[in-house]
Image (cartoon, rainbow, N blue to C red):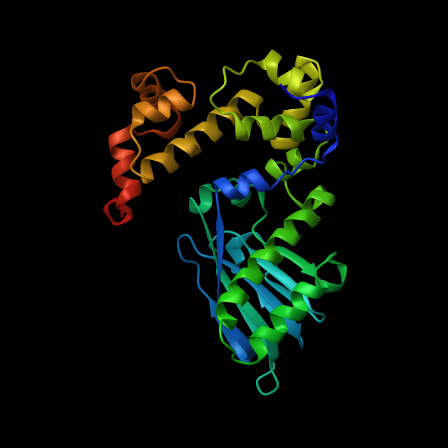
Length: 298
């Protein structure tokens, strides 16, 4: 049993709104370019491919296809971070001779477009480096490691891109208006964040709307209204979607459906299979086959 002193200490600790989420659904970065880009450089949209670019020096004309929903042409004249969390073709137009300096990485989100953070982010995040808090030392080390070849430099650069992404996510939690309604807005909400962390950490509990409201310190009606405004769905719909993400992750790892059903509060494999067919449009066998052999679904 916890002592009163221990309980007070744990209650006073700030919430880690990203740790458990990123431990469950990881993100891995891989450096693929460091140096100047001259003329026109195209980055094609490929399934599961996300990009994190850092413009270090120079001017960039950024172009997107007309159907993308983004501005077709944007001029960037200061060091800037560009995050494309989902596949989207984009072209860099830089000076033909002098060009512009970049460091660029691809990002591999566990679950691809279904990753909870990918779903919560806009198609493009553009953030001037001077306005991004806390990244000065990370960028200095990243630029230094990519400027000259040394033992382990690429591996270190990969990890620094992951640190940079985490720092960007922290900044978004402090400025949730930069993202559409979704998980990041929910995690930025002081009332909803404890509930979301509890759902993430204990998805198999027999959650009711009353229990969720109690965790958030709100009435059931206020919780329902606030949750829908911040995340764009009901608390129960979010819990179901979170559980099914864990199911898909478990099936891809070869875990038995019955074990997943027991862990996630469905009581039986048959009950979980029914929810999967209702929500995902396919049963466990088809889903496992698609997840374990993506080529079979193409």
